[in-house]
Image (tube, rainbow, N blue to C red; front, top):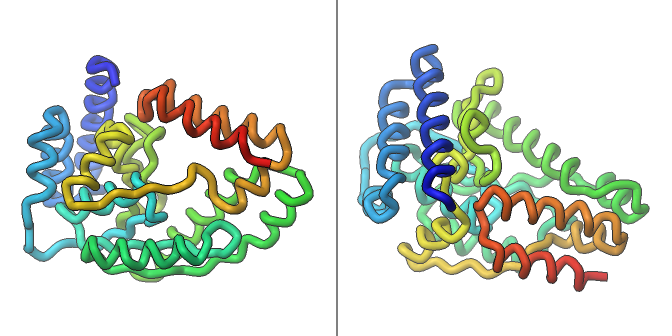
Length: 257
């Protein structure tokens, strides 16, 4: 990522963080730790050293939307520095195979975080996808976020953390009614490769297909491949993945029938 681009994103994240704090939305302890993360993220080696240092004090709970992928796993590791992490995986056989569920169970054990599977019904979205009526990602993502939000409210948890890499700047930390949402990699302007470095530092390597079972169904229709490729290209343009990885993901999509 170009240093100038990253600098602008970090400054915008900092400004929005300060705005939320001055409006009384953030507690001083949370604000100070998030501010320190932003400051240290300009020097990735210092940042990495800091987040891996143990901090055993009492912490406020946060939900981390945990898919078991690179971004959500890195977000959980970073979040442990500030919060008591409750990883929540929204489960449906429509989007997750049994081996994925087993892998997530082993992964959260290695991370040492509290974890919950929450089941969701996606059969209607699967049917619309099978019939070729739409690309499923938008509807699926919305349904999953609703489940995460409901879980946090039911448990009285104020913070939700996502592994979103594209919602940078003002969109990276926002107040949504009674919940504070932090898109952690976006907030810190991290790239996918930096997230992988965070995982490697704790002995974790994640290798997974680019697409989920539902998206592979969607790709039976050529127009849906186009929409998926457009998302991959957005990630390349945003410099959160490099062109080599972007090409690899596009070729994987094109090979699906």
